[in-house]
Structures are given as C-alpha cells and as structure tokens.
Amino acid sequence: MRKATIEEGKICPNCKKQENQIKIGYNRSGTQRCRCKDCGIRYTIDPKKHEYPEETKKLAMKMYYSGVSGRGVGKILGMNKANVYNWIKKTKS
Ligand SMILES: [Zn+2]
Image (cartoon, rainbow, N blue to C red; front, top):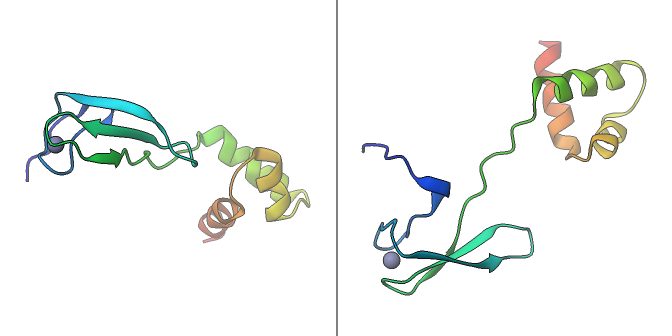
C-alpha cells in the first residue's frame, strides 16, 4: 500500500476520506477526537509515538548514572519510567 501524506493524521478509518473530518474535542488522555462528516463515525487520531530529543535522553542517562533511580529520572523528566529503562538497556549494550 502506498503511503499518502496525511495532514495531522485526520483520515476516516471507515471511508478513508481526508476531507470533511471535523475535530470534536479530546478524550481523557488528550487524544484528538474526530468525526467524519461523510459517514458520521467518530474516531481518535493515534498520537504519534512520543520521540524525545537526544538531549533529554542524554540528560536522563546522566542522572541515572549519577545515582538517580530510573523511576526518579522518569519523575523528574515527566516521562514513563519504562522509557527510561529502555534507554538504559540500549546504552548498556
Ligand atoms: Zn467516513
């Protein structure tokens, strides 16, 4: 399947239309909700995987290796501790 450029990821999962997609707010986790004017279904836009900048990663590692726990690092940087542990695993290998 060819990958089309989708603006803001607004595409109807049902009829695959990109036109007439209206924003109807956000759900609890802050995901954008949309409605297709054509077929009327509601859907949420998958948020792009949160990519952290290299500096944040470096900072996290620095903190970790200076004695802060993975959990602590996550707390300080406001991210999931699983994320931090992932980085640690990657840098160790
Ligand atoms: Zn539709």
